[in-house]
Image (cartoon, rainbow, N blue to C red):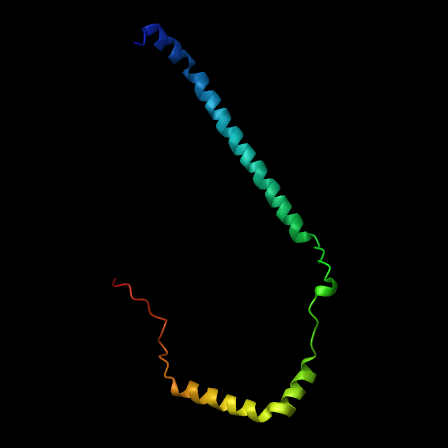
Length: 110
C-alpha cells in the first residue's frame, strides 16, 4: 500500500502536535520521578530522626557474664598452661619471616 501525497500533507500538519505530546509525556515522567525521589528522601530523613523501638529481649536474651570472676578463676586454675601456650605462639611468630612490602605492590604488567 503506497503513501499518497494527501496522506503526507496530513502527517506533516500533525507533526507538531505529536512532538508536543511527546514532550509533555517526558516532562510528566520526570516530574513523577522527582516526586518519588522527594518522598524517598523525606522518608529517609524521618527514619534518621525517629527513635526506633528495640525488640523485646524476653527469656531468649543472652546473659552477661562477669569477666572478672571468670578471669580470676582461669588465672588460679590454669595459669601455667596459658604461659606455655603464649611462649609457643611467640616463638612461632618470631620464626616466621614477613616481607614489609608484601601486599603493597600491584603488578600491572599482565
